[in-house]
Image (tube, rainbow, N blue to C red; front, side, top):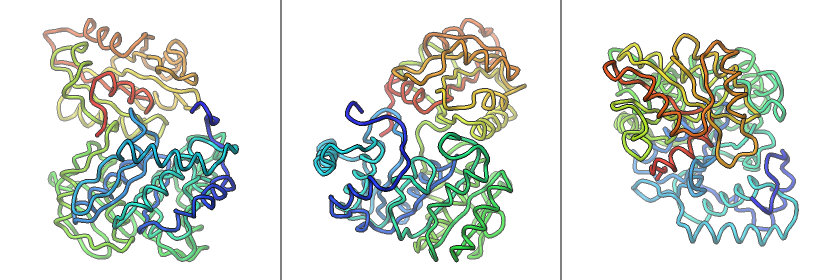
Length: 431
């Protein structure tokens, strides 16, 4: 981070040069499931991994950003078992080799880390590699791969507008850049017809076999079960372990993607995957840890790194569903960075929230000042107050609630960086 520029410099020239110096490890990978989208990338990646491991397949997994430790970006597949985060010495050696090959030339941190992905995944045998795009798609460093087993495009909404465009159709065109001529594409649930039209027209132009959520595959809840259906048949499954109705569509996209990648998917695999899938920092409930002592006794504490208006909508829907099943006063503890749309995020929670407490993000020079963030929450129709830390916000909630009433429900989020700080402070980093 000290040697290389922060942010993004979207181009494939530097990563292509670097990979050539390294012997082109990106051409020596197991079958790749390449995942892009504004929201849901991480969830569909987690479901794909759970499905493959449920079938006894080994799967490498690349995600970004990490929450607490850099190692979280790289999970190395283990034959017949659960993949493990990369070993410290192996990771350090890969970074050193990439740095030596780069020889001090201009390059971004993400490009360095992407080259590390290809080294690690090419040198450790596995049945599959699930690789999540960092930003966009067309010029993302991961997009040097020419022959993924399947390209997956998850929901598209407004985010990273300075890099990707200020309309969903422009963003969709960038995400569609991971599609490769004649190779399978799975399109997840899309909220915007304009985005879906761009994705469909791109797939048609490239002659890609395409499966679209709501047309070629689908999933819905019925009598407390998840019903999945595609052209291969119907499966009656348990509801996913990951909370929120939006996860039904994410699970469906993963099932269809793993099939499109050429793997056999049985109903037993699907059932096991729904029960064991995990994705830290995304509607994750904190049931233990140091921070709980600051909160009211019996409070539910959830953390979620969703940070754009689309994510706000699905998280707010999940909170509303929780409220329907078990009413509790809802409080938000939110920190955001200045490339996001805080008002758009907060609007999704109108009518649901008692109060918002806005906090800084530790060590970030891009954070929105809590006072300014509180004003954004106010502009969205919410009552808000700035705080210095998450712990202070939890103590303020403790002082505000009636001890004789139902304990509150608390959502901490607005940024993956804030969630990472919370998990680190709580002593519960991802494993």
